[in-house]
Amino acid sequence: MNVKFYVRALLCLYVSLSVHDLSAQALKAGDHLPLQIWSQPLKVINHPEGKETITLNDYKGKLIILDFWATWCGSCVGMLPKMNSLQKEFEGRLQILPVTYQTGREVSEFMNRYAQRTDRLIALPDVVEDTLLRSFFPHTYLPHYVWINEDGVFSIATEAGEINAQKISDFLNHAKPVMTAKVDPTRNVAYDIEKPLLANGNGGDGSNLIYHSLLTGYTEGLKGGFSIRTDSVSGRKVTVTNCSRLWLYRLAYAEPGKWFDEGSVIIESDFPERLTSKLSGERYRQWLRAENGYCYELKVPRYLVGETNRIMRTDLEKLFPQFIASVENRPVSCLVLEIADSALLPASTKGEPVVYVDPYEWRIANVPLYVLVDRINKLQNYPLSVVDLTGLKYPLTLTIEAGLHDLTKLKQQLALNGLTVTEKQVDHPVLVIRDNPVSGKF
Image 1 (cartoon, rainbow, N blue to C red):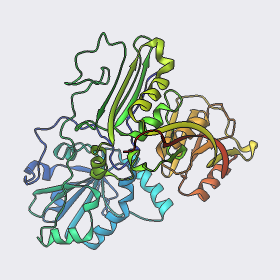
Image 2 (image 1 turned 90 degrees about the vertical axis):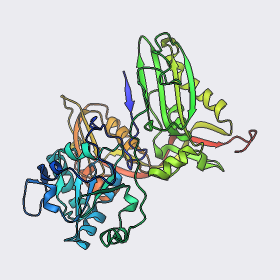
Image 3 (image 1 turned 135 degrees about the vertical axis):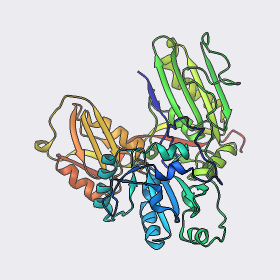
Image 4 (image 1 turned 180 degrees about the vertical axis):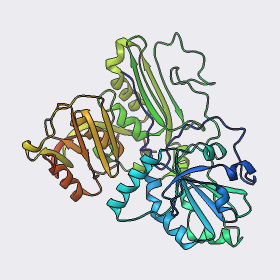
């Protein structure tokens, strides 16, 4: 079984998108938009006049900000009310256009849930199913904001921090606001996940490689993430690229093929800033570059597959002797999922498995409840872990129209299905990282 997970939670602010190779069309700051782009029809939903398509010509002469986003990107969703407010403030001189590759149905359903949960109506037309604009303005991380001035010139691409009323006002009044350009990797370092991570590309085809363990510092051009791949012939390979020390520990000390969620980590160190950071975007990448980001790979033959995590832990003891890590059962605050009314429990179901999680809805079909709980812990970045004490092991179908940030609504939804969630102190396996008293300090 292969498991591959490029870390969205590193942190949903900057999530990778595959971009088609359309470099011949890609524009750079200072370029005039070519004539053909202005008249190309763009599919939209939520248009104030009910239009199903628009063109950029509809907004020529205004400042246009293209807001590349996705419904699963928490940072993008968090910017929605601000973008809506800015559009109203600068109506007539500014047009903000959210742009996504997702379908109109996906976006429409999400926006309905958003309005219900937040009591906010976003009145921006959404460009959906986009490939055209992304080809002219390729990017790697979301959110991505493209500023096009009144003369049709691509002025700058920025991160969310540059989007505010003062800078928009200065831009419209030609006051030349000081803005930091968002610079995504223009190309990926040549890397094949099927081959070992070695110097000079892949360092050969790796066909006769039996075992290796490798650590490098932060590598420009590589996306942050990890993968765990196992097969009966070549054994197991764990690859981590441009991640913090903490992610190495979260993988090494978990059960094979899994990792500790954020709510199951306790740091008892005088140097927490050497383990992890709450920074985001370019500031986070700068933190990684400052000897806090690493690439690591461990490849073991099939007869050592069961020893993979032990070997990785041994590597960390050698490579980072300043820290000691252990897994301990501790009484910690968790959100405990339990049965409230067995008569209302969902029945067992069969069919195609489905697991979907976003901030406002959880949905599973034909999978056990613990699969949903595992996905929630890995994707929701909530300070408390969700612990499943229902004992339900059979596949079931369940839709919960709520999330962790609205526990009242969540409890109501769970009650309809015979379940309840309560914050409790429970003995729970946690990863504890502390300073090594006999090791040198940083």
